[in-house]
Length: 271
Image (cartoon, rainbow, N blue to C red; front, side, top):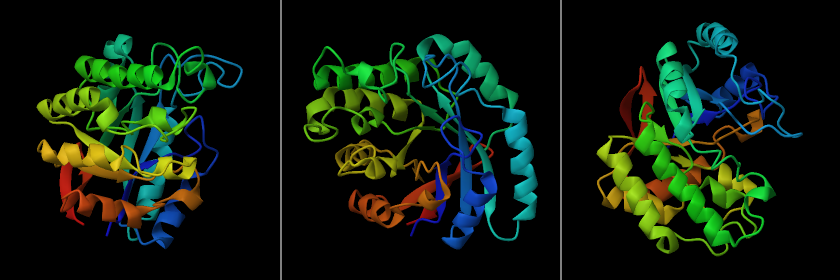
């Protein structure tokens, strides 16, 4: 049983309007023991009509103020951790390093949302080329990011691009992109970084979690043990969504534990 959700967004993230307290109350109602808020911090995110300048720049001080207040208020009901989801881009190495050191985070997700100036969330990322080329560009960008920046704990939603591709996961598999996934996983293991099982893709219409089950199996085969579980919820209703399925998948892949973090240190919880 999984009782910790380590990927949550509130109104402090540019793509959510949900008050933090609503997320906390939902987590308590669902029987969670730990939650970690991981608000978006995407520096140099491409500006567009849909995403004006500063959309994904986190007001970290305001976020931390509210979190500290609710952490005390709900201390008897649930453990609330201070996290962030950093949007990685190779040219932001110094800026990300300074930011990550500026606050005493419990947990940092390193995610790739922007590849060569474009977010795969938008159709423009796929225009003028086939889906495989777009997916390969995205997977390579994760490798490039991890080579450049290492001050994070787990790498977020490794196949994020698949959520938004023209055919989503219809023609997608670990085997098709094995060369890139193996480089990615070996690099993460070499640097003692974990990955997350993200259930958010299921709500977008994919058949599998993110990354897909075969990638999770491969991570385990290569010796990977550090894995967190996150719903990627942006509203209270989605807190801990599909965690029963996540537990079954992890067990089926051979995992006996999942991780929670505090003070940037992993603690293993039995599935």
